[in-house]
Image (cartoon, rainbow, N blue to C red):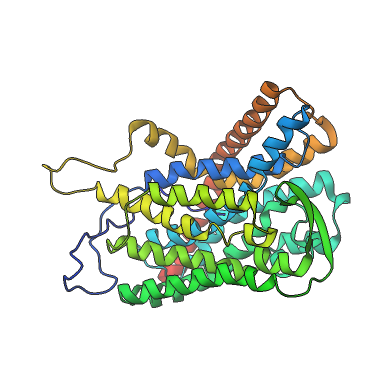
Length: 408
C-alpha cells in the first residue's frame, strides 16, 4: 500500500511539442500537490475495507448480501493493484525534486514501520492463538510474502502482506529510478508495454499449468460462486513480491512520462475501461485473471491521466482558463487521502474484534450500510490519531539521525 504523503514537492510536467528537442528526464521544478490522486485514494481504500467485510454476513437479507458480496468482493483485488501502481508513481513523483540518496530507504521505512509494529503487536496480544509461530515471525519481519503458504502471509495483521512488496520496491527504487530517468520517451513506452505484458500474461500462462494443493477462501469467487485456488498459483500471481513489484514499476514509468508531458489527460476513457474490466471479471474471468491482469491497463491509464490533467491546469499563463484544477470540495476530501495507509493497516484488528466479540452481523439494509460506513469512519479516525500521536512523533525523533547519516 502507498504510505507516502502526496503533499510533498513534485515537479510540474513540461508540455513540449512532440518534435521539440530535449533531454530525457529533464523538467522544471516547482512545488505542487496531486490533489485529485490524493482524493482518489479514498475510494479504493473503502473498497478494500468493504471487501474484507463482505466475507461476513453483514446483511440479513440473502439477496442484499449477495449483491454486496458480488460488488465489493472482487473490488478488493483491483484496489490493491491500484495502490501498488500508485506506490511506484508517488515515489517517482517526489523523487523528481529530491533524488533518492543515502537516507531514502530509512525515510521510506519510517512511513510504514511504526504503524506496522503497532498493529502487529495489537493483533498478536489479542489473537495470538489464531496464528502459528513462523507466521507471526514472518509477518513481524515483513518476509511473509516470500512464503507460498496462506497460514504465513496472512498471519497476524493479514493486509500487511503487501509491505513485503513495498520493501522490495524501496530497495530497488534508487537504482531503477536512475536508470529509467535517463531513458527516452520511446524507450519508456516500450518498457511500460513489457511490464504490463508480464502482469497480463503470467496468470494467463498459469491457467494452462496443472494445479498444486488447493485452498478455499471467501475472497475466491468466479461469477459469484466460491472456488478453490491452487496455492502456488495464487501466491505467485497475487502475493509474491517480485511479481507485484512489476506493477509498481509500471507506476514509475507512467510518472516519468507524465512529468515529461507525454501522457493522456483523458480520464473518462480509463474509467470506462476499468468499469468494463470489472464487469468482465464478474461475468467471465477465472479467478487468477481477476487479481490484477484485467484491470492493470485501465489503472495505469487512470493514475497517469489524473496526474496529467491536474498538472495541465498549473499553467503559468495567467490569461489561460484553468482546466483540470481541483474544486474546493476535492481539495478538502484530498486531505484525508494521506491517511489511507493507516485505514488499510488498522481495519483488520477491528474486523477480528467484530468476529470474536461484537458480531454485528445480520442487519437490515439501511443498518448494514450504516455499519460499513461507520466501520470506515472509525478506521479513518484511528488513522488520524495514529498519524498525530504515533507516526509524526517517531518521524520527528528519528529525523536528525537520518539527516546526519545522509551527510556523512
